Image: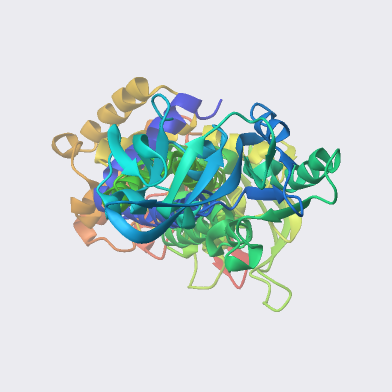
Length: 357
Length: 222
């Protein structure tokens, strides 16, 4: 008969409780290491997530199809709405310029747009209520126009403006345009399409094929050139310095555990001299070290999330998940490795260990 | 014989000299044996070999005629069930209480904590430590701490108690108290093997082995 497992666990917990300072110090170190790792992940994932959002909001996945001389099918463009991978699609054609009596001599460009175009140029904004002209925000500011107002347009008379749109993120030029919503029938100059990120490359090829039928030599170009962006979020994330943190942090904690076990080798020798096996020693160490690492991880992760929340108000959920996965993996590996430190230090002759005391 | 060594030679590495040079020894149940000799004569090494803490370089240790290897799983079981140790520098968990330390060997034998502490408490009280059972060992004097270690050894009622200069750091009065507790207070049937420089301590033992340069020079009182 040898140690009961429950007594081994109790013995480990007894050793944990017998030296509060050591236990707290080790928990603080675990919290610092695991929390530091979580914080680095949160910071970088949050920053890249924000960049990716800005990148997408800036029209990174918007493509524009046109055909030389115009005459692009508005119906084909509008029908892209609902196609998998397409967020929104709409067509536009320029209709010249308009002037307003309230700003004599100032020319404003006018265009016809299909309803889906607003989903590309002003994503997230509600559609116009009722018929009427849509004003870009700069035009509205210059002429004092707001939604629901009737203003006089030269050559057209009193005209109802149903909405004012901010196009600054997707097509800043249109901020000074007056837009007329029209059905998708007939020919248009351009078809604007926003894809989901994963569908963008294939979507551009699909656009070229779609408008090749019935239109000569369609041209598909990105709204933003790829070289406008010097950052590659995916590559940055893949090469982040802390990507091996799940391994590095447990190795550091293991080194610390080995040092601690070395200073306590006479205790290990005492247990071994009484017939305790090395695996039993590891079980005892498990009971002693799991609470330390567990508490350290909870405190460290909690502090990292709290710090990031304080800095960014609300950390992105995918950033929290990344930090949880990396620091959680590190904590789990540390939980597996640390209990073997005592058994490793106590390998070899028990008599020699006893002499080392 | 219950505990025996045959043709045991030992050195700590190829570069070191032989510490034990061909020892043959038998220890009967219930005996008290003193190992005497100058420093470096091999007393501690012989104790380690007898107690299955060190595997001799050559020769074998046998219990009840069956050879045992120190590194084997069986040796761990035997250490838990049949041996107890008392060391010169009282080896204890200094941040744990006297009672927790005195219970350790019984826990290692598979007893539940309540039963182990009950037996250990009785042993501590028998050794005059009843008032100090809850005190952390690091707060005890050297003599008190050594008595805790003796209580740990005796409480387990082992077949053999191995004591490596248990009085080496104690004053004369405490030494006699500790030796009395160890030799006279041991359970019936338990053998005590004490490595010591102290002739008075050796005189309390029924058998005295004198070692010199890893060999037995004399064996008196068998």
